[in-house]
Amino acid sequence: MSISEATMPAAAGFEVPRHVAIIMDGNGRWAAARGLPRGEGHRRGVEALRRTVRAAGELGVGILTIFSFSAENWSRPASEIKDLMGLLRRFIRNDLAELHRSGVCVRVIGERKGLDPDVLRLLEEAEQLTQANDRLTLVVAFNYGGRQEIARAARRAAAEVAAGRLKPEDIDEEKLATFLDAPDLPAPDLLIRTSGEQRLSNFLLWQVAYSELVFVPTFWPDFDRATLEEAIHQYCRRERRFGGLAANGAS
Ligand code: FPP
Image 1 (cartoon, rainbow, N blue to C red):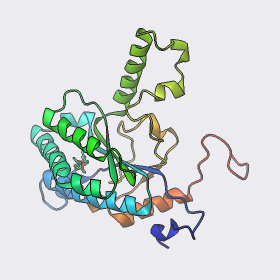
Image 2: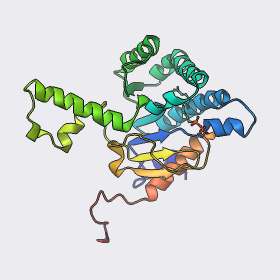
Image 3: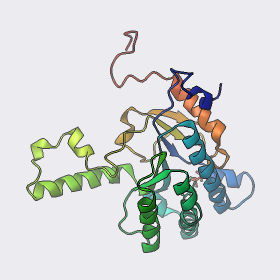
Image 4: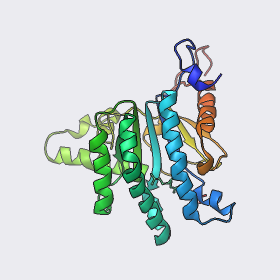
């Protein structure tokens, strides 16, 4: 049975994760294995992204968060950064209308300060145009790092304290979370990393505290609906306990 059938009302009990986050890894290795430049891997990575957004929407995923450029990616060669920025610009210019038509709401998380003004404008335009859409929320993590996001949240909370609007003793876990980049969104249920690497690389450190982690060997440019379905199947086989006890009482 495919997940799409599983999500149909007749197949109750099969829960598609509400929020899926993906570390899209392996573009460079995909290209190297074929004797192609790394940029070709990234270009094919954008095609995989298109497929994945479509599949996520069809499968009934509500929120898809993608790690598209990390705060640490600035340490890559200038030519690769230029390629990645070019791909982002083209992705928004070419795909925004289609994303909008298909009901995708684009959100952006990450540090906006210091971005090229035209890149920032495109990201903001995507957010504004699609803000009322509700079929799928596509969260683009751009110039993003988890530790940096937590530091930003602390800074925003500190500014509220300095302004006399917040008392230090009122800052608890729940309060601090309201200062994150997208505080209204639920945490990911499922985090997928492609390419066989098994680490978080500073992605959504706060939010993935209780997410299920699935690592797939596929390089990102080869990722498709079937790979997404397989990762969701793995997720469905897990029992989420959130620090409590299993349904049968086992810890
Ligand atoms: C990891 O592959 C991927 C990235 C650093 C960027 C992800 C970007 C895309 C999928 C394309 C761009 C999409 C947008 C929306 C801009 P890697 O280069 O680290 O691969 P490697 O580990 O095999 O070298």
